[in-house]
Amino acid sequence: MSSRPRLSSIFASSTTASTTTTTVAASPARPLPPAYAAFQERLRSGTLGPDDARQLFDELLLRRDDPAPAPSRAISDILASLARAPPSAACSDGPALAVELFKRMDRWACPHAAADAPTIYTYNILIDCYRRMHRPELALAVFGRLLRTGLGPDVCSYNTLIDGFSKEGEVDKAYELFYKMIEQSVSPDVVTYNSLIDGLCKTKEMVKSERVLEQMVDAGIRPNNKTYNSLIYGYSTAGMWKESVRVFKEMSSSGLIPCVVNCNSFIHALCRHNRIKEAKDIFDSMVLKGPKPNIISYSTLLHGYAAEGCFANMNSLVNLMVSKELAGWMMLCTNSTTWLILVYHRVRLFTAV
Image 1 (cartoon, helix red, strand yellow):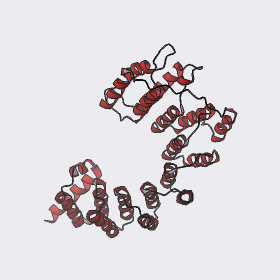
Image 2 (tube, rainbow, N blue to C red):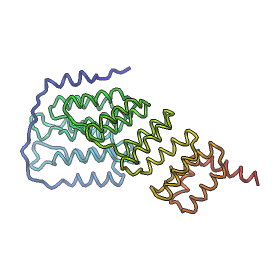
Image 3 (spheres, rainbow, N blue to C red):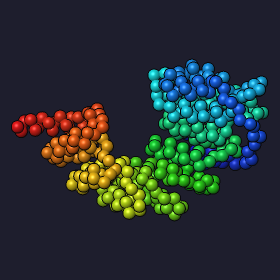
Image 4 (cartoon, rainbow, N blue to C red):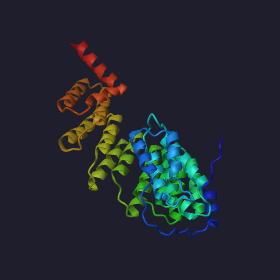
């Protein structure tokens, strides 16, 4: 088993780092080099391969003898765009390529030129790359380096790291980072709380999630739809459907308008616990008052009807989809489980006739 850095050692090593940051005199805005536009255009079109990326990035890297180097923010923007780019035939892993380019930049940076050194914005992009690569332990190593530079971290650094550990199921580490964040006088925001609550709910630690929710409210940060959606999902998967109902009602009474994701989660919670009538009531309310049901709304209720053997109701729901001319409803057939349910239902009707 590979050893991972302990949070205590990472924060302890940062205490010897200088707390002052080097300031760089502001320079007038410079036109971006052609390589910048070429990089972004090929990335958007899905034609940017690794070799092209390396060549164009090398053109952008700061050189000591270049009288008009590319602004460091432009280089960071390139890395951020690459990290967020969806997989394409030319480049299947944007985050991994962004990490490679960061290392190239790091090697080329002059140790005596502050303008060449990575900024906190660049470090945050690198942390996000490792989060997207499902490697939060490597993101934590970058976080430790950021601490030692004296540049940060800031709320974005913590949020990305907490979200990364939460999504990988390492909620204890995310929880520890949350309290380290407060100790370091970095104020959590709604993104921090939502990431942590979502991670706790997915591991069914509902007592802790309610505790974090209480801290969120006490801090003056209002829970939003995403907060409540995580709680509805958590209570549903924990078999506590009555708590899902309570959270849904609490969200509505707080003045928040449930979005389609909230409604879908609630319908799923009710169907999971054989509360088909209540699920149908929520669905009917969506049809009449909004938000408009989507493919997942129909699919979830169809699954609930199938589990209960309510085949006549399934037929009515399919007919409703057709009558509403639901855009892309045939895409439902790409979900193999739902397609089998519909075929089975049609066969039963045919056999009955």
